[in-house]
Length: 261
Image (cartoon, rainbow, N blue to C red):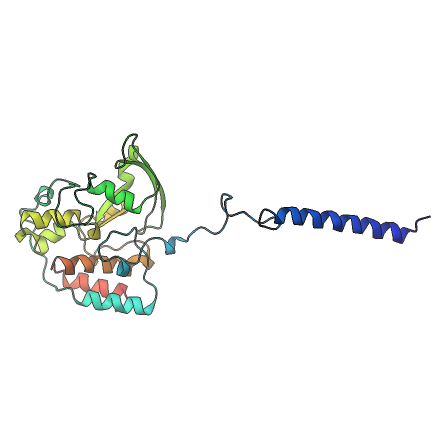
């Protein structure tokens, strides 16, 4: 006759044996019960918005995707040193400015810049550079018809489709009309075309944010997301130094302030 204590012991042993067997079988798949597999949707942690994109200090040609914040003091000090190199002057008149003075929009034939003459226009080159989960038009490896974009200016994750093209706009970080007023009016046509299609000066962003910027300098407009503002100032400085283009004193002061100056 089994005593109550013996029956309980056998029952517990059976439960433990069953649990151990299940754990060993699950372990053959490389995990414990309840663990997500690396191939499972959502397994692991998604990259944070703050970690998206490339540091401008590591992207001097603008060929790498996105725009990452500069958070360390050494990086911000390097940013201030770069900004200090940018000359200043007053903003001139807009007389004679026209978008066509910089060539037709998104030309593939501008000389002297990365990605030119590759059979794909500048806008699509930039969408391919910065987009994720890209889909192309049937039969094309150039024309982007849908993608996901992390917008560094607002922090939005944008599921973009070509049918609503203006939801993503390509920002000239130094606006063309601003450049015209600061000296580009005296450049030759080839240099203006280079400037307008240089990936260093171009960033796909949220359309409404870009529209609100218009042709403003950093003293009048900054990205809504504060953590990206120093990086924004650095990219403007990189463009200004490359093209020997001054900014206004107010804009330079604002740029230094964003990087702790």
